[in-house]
Image (cartoon, rainbow, N blue to C red; front, side, top):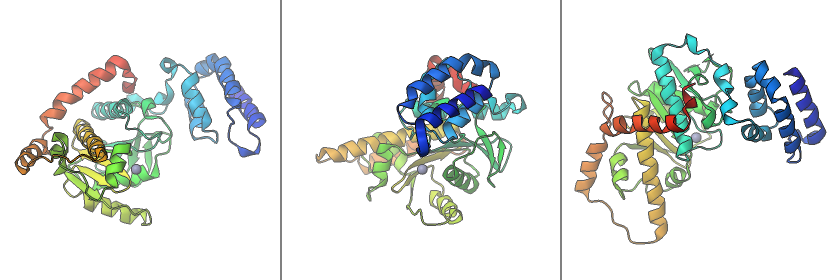
Length: 330
Ligand SMILES: [Zn+2]
């Protein structure tokens, strides 16, 4: 591994100069080096070092290279970070569902490079939650690689950093809402677009009506301090389970990861249709108040009980992941 790292640094020094960023010209050389050294890297077991170095190091281009060059099936990546043997069955079940949710974000195109974050409360604790290691692609997140973080901001398990904004948002919602165990946050195109609209979410579709009575709004203000922002997030979400964060994105939260995912799916679809419908320039049908009331009642989230829709949909989502790539369970 040392030999590999020295070789790589030497190669980068030759190819990057003073800019400290790998040039496109260096990619074929780096790719050849990783490929040639791959059997040594496998034997050394130092994938985590390679990954940490390539992702959070000074050469982000290597992240792309790494994900392209090294075969998917041979990338244990961050299983190195946590020891599954030390994790309770209850926590492992939550970790598996949360890792599955990261993979579903990839599947549905809701990712934003390595940014945004999904979290879950650690079962049996009052001040700890799980979140993604900052730097991993969502498709690389596994049950064992998730960080365990305290509300105070200490990493309890895992040797990656977390995203500071992620910690602020997720710890704020989880602290404000004891009934909530999962929080999802996205920066999708449709979600961000609707977040810029003064009209908010409109009653244009079944899916919009299902969720709109449960949507809170949060004004954008990056100038405020983290503490004030956290307080405002907690008060703005109030007793709702979804939030449109102005000029920023979407957030859903619920008692289970399955429910939070279903809410995000519903809200995201509603936003997509709203954007397309408004862009069409046509005169639009809005749903009648009676239909709005019925759909809103159907979509109401019961903190005590997972909705039928999410109960039915979640196992199907897991079957889909298992059929294609079950590595989220690692
Ligand atoms: Zn964000």
